[in-house]
Image (cartoon, rainbow, N blue to C red; front, side, top):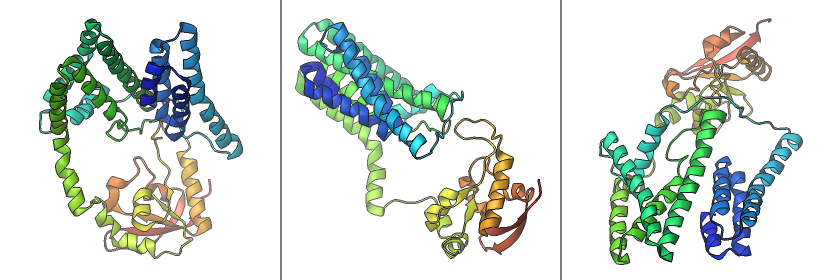
Length: 361
């Protein structure tokens, strides 16, 4: 999509424009963060599309409509036809230490991890400042190619900023569980690389010298990843939950009858280790909003009734406390609303319980 926008700025023809609209339609449907592309493309077209002002605005509006309409249709289908509902609600939970986290993550894409975190962050700020300065240097040269490079760097920065805004708004107002890590920020990696490379290639002349310098810096940036990748190829991936996967508790769960209802606070681990789905225990605080779950007591009673009705199993594995859902209901909570009997005790400390009755409200 970004490449098609760049091509559209040079050719301003119908086919690249249609391609941009298709990408704008597909991006949010694939991931909500795709709205960053929609917003970035609209801003770029309004500012730099080589047409008169009214046609630039119309082009931007067409891109926004192309991104919003398919999502609106799909949302209507999921709510009215499939009877689903949004799992997110608006609440303020501003990200903690946002700027230091961003500096730490982005600096890791460019600089060795062995450097002190403060030094690495400072060097990143310098690199980004020099990249921004290069835009003015290229524009001041006046030649067509230099101004084209300056615009390309700026366009890439707009797309990067638009994506970052979507992530921050999501984390700050829609879903507090959205992590700020390499996986979430992955689309920024090629944008940051292209920004710096384009700026360096434009400022440094002759071109062969720029190519050699850029290649050397790319090797330096890639060095920290070489050893883990080689280890992965030689030894294969490792799982931190291997011990739990092979535990006696998980073996006991695998031997349960196929239709047995399972309730646990380690539902991801249970599924990974046994390929058995389990109902997650209620939580005291909603992870997406960080607000107290006012329905906790009701949900706890509903889970207890479900366990009685379906003759289900409540799983407790103290050794897997690190995988337990934060703020999740415990065995002690369950005993406040129901009669719980120990069904089986395992050598690894795991215990399986059955609920034989629910207390009257």
